[in-house]
Length: 366
Image 1 (tube, rainbow, N blue to C red):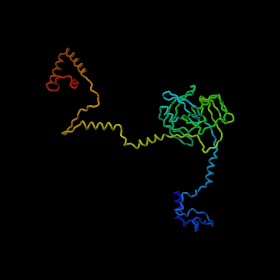
Image 2: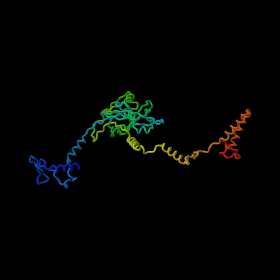
Image 3: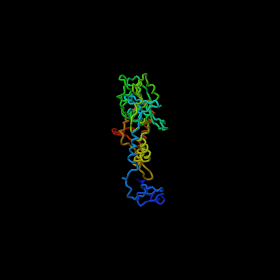
Image 4: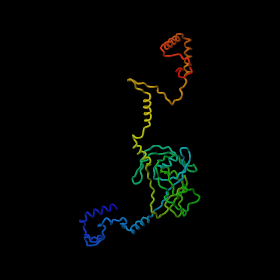
């Protein structure tokens, strides 16, 4: 509507240059050929009505919708299997897996990797997709996969992506008219039900899964292929009419939450306190409490820790050393005389003093 108003105002200003003649009837203009045609150019402000007739008629809209409804889509059933995988604690999980021999790597969804608590390894792999598109994978995990009978097992490396594909199949498939033999075991018992795909096996292991035995389902384009996990089913299931055309694609993108976290971490540089700041503030606080400046000098109090446990008692260590010294002086009287003279000198100079009460812990020898 804004674009229409701007266009009308522009035409009003250039009205005198238009190759037409305005009649008295403001709803008509005369073209250079003399034909009278309906005009929507010469309008006053009250005629710009939001409820005006749309430019596209109802018939045209219906024709467009009908052409979209007439899409004929060929439905193809891709091979899926129910496999078993162990987490880092040895617990077993069943996971729906897509088998794709067109992929050279194996994929694992990030949700499954988190649920299994698998250890991530950092990688930087550029993965090429269809139409020349590419994306970067940041991590990979290792896990052991096996079948229900445990006759087949492999340790594989999976590259972790946010999402492998949409629900598969995209719509519920009616297989009631398909004559699947009853004596065979399907690799995916619910292949006809839409479900999540959390793993993708690439060509590295695709052909190792195959076993001898192939069955063509009568009156259909489906094929049953025997594998280590049971019979894989694949092929065309006919043409259907649908409003949408579901296409199997792979879209890999780094988690948006991780991107936002990195952004806000970058913006918070200089705002968020570093853990070392607390230690520096604590040291400055202790300095202000223990240092006193006076008469061009300063005094520092002993930095006792208030939260430490009671100091240990070293009285018995000192007593043991003293007794050892007494044993030495018995064999060397001159050593005793030297110690006596030094201690008497310390007493005379008040460096040491004799104690009458030895029960106080701070008076014990250090």
